[in-house]
Every structure is written in structure tokens, then in C-alpha cells.
Image (cartoon, rainbow, N blue to C red; front, side, top):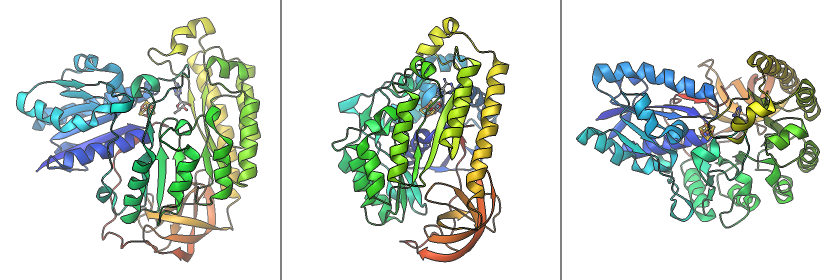
Length: 461
Ligand code: 5AD
Ligand code: SF4
């Protein structure tokens, strides 16, 4: 048996793609190892959303070079950097054996065979468009023992946000037919999953035979599924029908990630985001009326070319006004071939120190607001879906509230249970407490050993 190790960077699409890679490898009699030093095959599933993400993957690649030297491991790069760089990556990294894009995961066994048998260096980065695209189907058995899973509903992105590399790395939008999505959800529910997150670069523009709102409602009706989440959304596609779904279906979890990017209409226009701050706020007000208490999170870019101090202050004000539960904020990073990177000199480059100072101020503000939310939970009893052992303390359990707040607690309920936890303490990013009641038992017997967590570096980092 040969061993493989996958190092995943980036977003939930990549996490999901890594799972599909694992499935393909298990059919070739490869088994996973948690230690790259013992692997015969190492794959980096990469992200190119910001320059920093690319740097991280290059330094990881350097570390794995030693494994290749010591035991002849095969080394491959997949994901968004692979798609962006294609054969250039083989030239840049002479010890790399293969490069494959997100649309070529199904070809992985063939690629590896070519590397092993013909000692070829292989590049597979063709996009597969609309009609021909076949979504890799998840094997539900590989999710047994888990509680929550991603289900892909679409791939690619047809938006033209001027800062974003994704249309170049993930291609055009293709939606997955809704019956296929529902079958996958039902299969996952049968092996004990209680929650699914429907994922895509822009799920609101889903076109798989029914509207995205209908897809959420149908998913929520799958027996065994208690919570339905989704990510990620573009504000300009947020429909009234979707807001209505939040009103009528409590299983749609009360959390909405709605990236605003910034608080200035002028910058939003340069970003080609297609909405104004006011339009965004109106949609948000409707959403909060439909589901009082819904947690709203966002993404923000600071230091976009030309952003003045006043415009940055607008982002601060918006953060304060919306009172986001949390936000992922980043300094602007120019990406190859994007509209903003081509025009940034005309619009005005923001010095790195200024960008970083703005980011620090914004993050400090958000930490305060997040802390107010978590602090408001102390003394309350909250519903938690148990996911397993706590990462910080092996004697504790870990789970999430419907709003997606992280909870570490004293208790004994197995993964897949729903419990009431009395919250005793809070930090800005987690709640702590003790289990006081079991609300629902798992639907299938838990595994004797809980599953290890794979290596993942989130895009947020
Ligand atoms: N620079 C900085 N942040 C970016 N994002 C996307 N592209 C860039 C970029 N070039 C951020 C956006 C997006 C999140 C996933 O990453 O905020 O919503
Ligand atoms: Fe995900 Fe975008 Fe990073 Fe690709 S570039 S892994 S789509 S966040």
C-alpha cells in the first residue's frame, strides 16, 4: 500500500476538492498518512486569492522537497495556483512532478500513473465547460463518522469583480442539477450527517433546474438533516425568495455570509460589485426582519487602489452600523490579469504600511463587536450540534450553535447529537460552557474512534 498526504490551502471549494482527490486515490490503493515524511505522494491543493496564499504554498513546497529527496515521493500541485500558472509552475519548480487544475481531479489516477510509469512531468489544466462538466460525486461512505459536510452545487464564477482571480482559476459558472444535489444530501444523511453546507463561488446565481431558495428548502426536507448552510453569496443576487426561505424554514441555519467588500460606493463601483451600500443595507434589513437574530458575517478588502482615508472610514462606519458577528478582512493584493491590477497605478497605489494600519484598526473594531456578541451569550442555554472532541482540550467536546458560533464544553454527548449547553465564559471567537441536556441523539451509531482533522490552511489566514 502506498501512502499519500494532501495539504489543503484556501476556501471550502478546495477542502471539498481535496476530499474528491482522496476518493480517487483510495481507488488506486493509496491510503492517507498524517505525516508527510512517510508519504509516497504529496499533493498541495493551492489557493491564489492573495499573494500571501501563494507564498505559503511555495514555502510548503520547499519543505516537501526534502521528502522527495529522501524517499522518492511524487510531488504534485493542484488547485488555483496550478490553474493560474499551468506549465510555468513546472519550470519554476524543477522538482515538481505534476500540475493539475480544479477541473481535472477525475484525471488524477491517470496523471499519477503517467508520472510513475513513464516518469513524465504532467500538466492537466484544461477547463471543462457547461454541458460537458461532470461534478465529482461524493462517496457518502467516506463521510461516515462526520457530522457536517460540504455539498457542491455549482462551480466557477461569472462575476467580474475587479480584484478577484477566481474567474481565471475556476472558469465559468456551471450549476449542478438539483436532483443530483438532493441525492448526495440524502446519501450523506443515511450515514449519519446532520448538517450540510451547499457550496459554490456564487450560490445565489444557481441555475440547476430550480431556484437556489427552492434548493435550500428541498435540502432542509431531507430526512435526518437538521441544519442547512450555504456559502458564498454575492449581494446583487440576494433574492426576496431566498430571504423568504429564511422566514419559513427554521432548518436553514440563522447565519448569512454576505461579503460587502467596502463601505464606499465609489470604491464598490471600481470593484465592479454592482450594488450600493444603501442597496446592501436594505437587503440586510429585510433579512433581519425575516429571521430576527440571524448572524451576519462579511468579507472586506482595505487599501483597494485609490481608497482615501475618508473612504476607509466609511468601511469602519459600516462595520459599526451592521454590527457584523464576524468578518474576514484583508489588505488588497494585486492578482495577475485582474482589472484592478491593470489599473492600480492610475487609481493610486496605497502604501503597504497604510493598508496594514487600516486593517489593524478595522480588525480591532471587529474584535470588539464580536466580543459583544459572544459576551451576550454568557448565562444563556444554547443549542449545540456536537461535532466531536475539542481541539484545545481533549477532555472537552466541540460543536456549533445555529448561528455558527463555536462552543467548547464539558459533556459526553457523541458526535451527531444535539445538546443544550449552558454558556459560562466567552472570548471574541468562542463560547465555553457545560452540557445540561440532550435534545437529539445521533441517527447512526458513532464510530469507535473520532476522525482526525486533515491539514488545512484557510484562505482567511
Ligand atoms: N486582495 C485581497 N483580498 C481579496 N479577496 C479576493 N480577492 C482579493 C484580493 N485580490 C477577498 C474578498 C473575497 C475573499 C474570499 O477574499 O474579500 O470575498
Ligand atoms: Fe478558493 Fe479562491 Fe483560493 Fe481558489 S483562489 S482556493 S477559489 S479562495
